[in-house]
Structures are given as structure tokens and as C-alpha cells.
Length: 337
Image: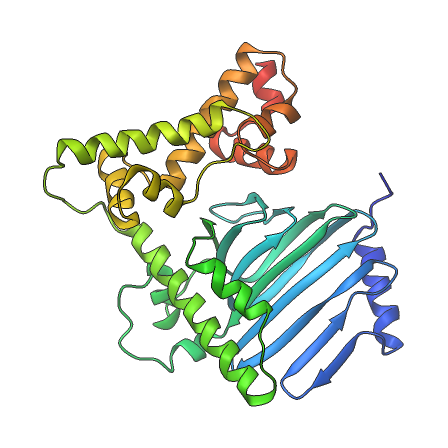
């Protein structure tokens, strides 16, 4: 592995490139920030959709590992969708998700106006992510906010809010086509801005709704019919089998795939998991992954890397961070107990 680039060298490379006007190109409401060639290749594309509402698309490959340690200062709310690659990030002092992996396929909402950020990026990895940056004042241009997450409401109301990072799990089937439509936008000029704004607002709405629904207590539903309960337990078994068989081509199904396989609509499947199993489908999957990992660490000599892949993780750092969040100890330390 190449020698990592630390914060001081990283800053020096950026400053040298900026001084030579090699970085930014602007055309109307659209800008491109090229990655300095000494770091790798790629760029960030920024589109200002409205005052206080921006769309960023990052697509970079670092030639060497990157280890950063700096003061993160983005006073806006950000919604991020990870399209490829993964990295580790630590925000010391953050109440939840202080040490985490941001991995391909996941999404998150965060508000980190001023907090230390320690970040680790791998070399020769395609890192692509899409971010919406939203000023609170932009949200206040809308009225009648209902059914939104509590912390977003507090921001809109002007109340004090601690910095937060909220992982929302794997992108749903609703998100995927919107993300691809944004990346492949066929329009130019004003039509492009209208198109991207409409798609970005759709993503914003879906994420707010998704988080708000996760905050709601399970609804009191009528007693489940025996045939529907059987379908829920079948769904549970499908998830378990997808992790009990570590073949390369065996992966957990998406929510919609799982619903189709058992003959329930996705809404009823989600409600059923909350009522019968006391968690979301995604939460059940992650808990079962960790239980399987526990068993393999205790009962076998399988390497930790192989265990990570066996329980459905695409990288060792992502698995190690998830295991630590679940049990408060690393997989290696757990095995040595």
C-alpha cells in the first residue's frame, strides 16, 4: 500500500493547485472543481438549484490512501447518497454514529455545523456520491411542516440542535431511478435546472418521510391473519438464508424483492416486521448479520475478512465499524475475549 496522504500534505496540494487556477470552472449556476492531479483524478460538480439549495456530485479516485483530520464546517443540512466506494469517518463527541463507515448503497442525513472530522479513504477506489446541501432558511420558505423528523423540525423552528448524523440504510427502489435520472440529465440551461430541482426535491421529500416513519412507534394493527403471519416468517427465513449461504452471488434481497417473493406489498411487509419482530426489515437484517458474525468469531477460525464477506459486507472496514457500533468492541478484540 502507498504511503497515506495526511492533512498537512493534502492542504498543501490543494493550495498549490488553487494558486495556479487549476481547480474551478464556472458556467452560470454550475461549477466543476477538479481534483488536483497529485491526489488522483475526478471532480466535484456543483449545481445551485435555488438560493440555499445545491446539488453536489463527487466522482473521484485517489492515487494514494487519504487520512484527514480537520474541522468540518458546513452549517447546512446535507443529504448524501453513496453510489460507489466506501470510507471510514469519525466525528469525536457526536452522540450517535460517532465512528462509522459510509458505504456504497447507503444514504444519510446530517447536520454538522462545526465538528472535528477524521476520515480514511482507500487508494484506487472509485468514490461516487451525490449530496443535497440545504440552508435552513430555504426550508422556511415552505409552510405547514408536518410529518417530518423531530430534529429537522427543531432546526426549522430555530431551536438549538446538537450536531447529528442519521444513517437511513440502503437506498430503496424509489431512490434508485431518481439518482440515475439526475446523473443522466438530458437537458441544458434552464430546463436542466428545473429538472434537477424537481428530482432533488423528490429525494428530499422521500428522505424526510423515510426518517419520520422510522421515528414513529409501530402502529396498532388488526390481528394478523394466519396466512399473512406465515408470509412474514417466510420473509424472515429468506433474509436468514441469504446470510447463511456465503456464495458470491447470494445477497440479501431489496425490500421490494422480498415483498414480491412472499406475496405482500412493501408497506405491509414493513408494518409486519415492526409489529411482529419489533424492528425494521433493514434493522432485522443488520442484527442477524451481527449475530452470525458473533457465532463465526467464537466457533470457527475463519479469518475476520472472510467473516465480513460471509455476513454480507463488501469490505472489512465497513464490517468492523458496524460490529463495533453493535457491541462496543472490535471483531478482533471480541474473538480474543
